[in-house]
Image 1: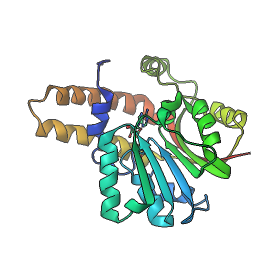
Image 2: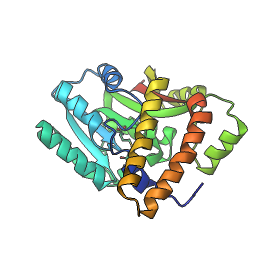
Image 3: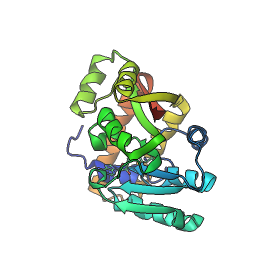
Image 4: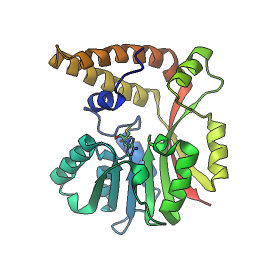
Length: 251
Ligand SMILES: C[S@@+](CC[C@H](N)C(=O)[O-])C[C@H]1O[C@@H](n2cnc3c(N)ncnc32)[C@H](O)[C@@H]1O
């Protein structure tokens, strides 16, 4: 497996067909966000906001204001176009930058979203420190984080180690939540179908891209990566990893 893969370029292709860019369906995301008492006065912060789909769902449903931060201009431009088309541009401000440089202020938000982007801050525990500052008293955090069904098969554990991908067990996540001064209110675990769909959309997008660019060396490297990923996914990830979207509130 190539360790030189340009993962940003890969994900720009692999996520081209996604709406929400994580393995949770829109309706389930709306169900968890529906617990946050959002309204037209609410302010939401989305870190690693991707193509803007989660914010679009919230703005459409509750008319809240969404601040979005993503390092990739490809995604922020796509998000701008999406909001423009939906007539929602006035409800958002979009920042194309590394989230670590973004000034989150103090207690300015009613809800902070971190869907698959805790590694930006160094991991789950460090991200909770940031969000503890970002949200107001009584504010909420919705954080998406994988968990492992421990103990993992040795080969899979070695693979994750090679990628420097630290995945906690569910119990460890709960300990961190307690230690960081949050209470866990909801935890939606993605179903097998949601996982399969999320992965399949990546594989198909990469395959479509390689077919459309037959002479492109990178496209073929991405296809090789997909084949490796498929094996890891079908042998291990699908059985040993859960995707959790958790609703937290500071104690
Ligand atoms: C898996 S996608 C998730 C997108 C979105 N949260 C969702 O669930 O639909 C991860 C996003 O994090 C962004 N990202 C990665 N590193 C970042 C950083 N240092 N600062 C801001 N965004 C970052 C990527 O560009 C990508 O859009």
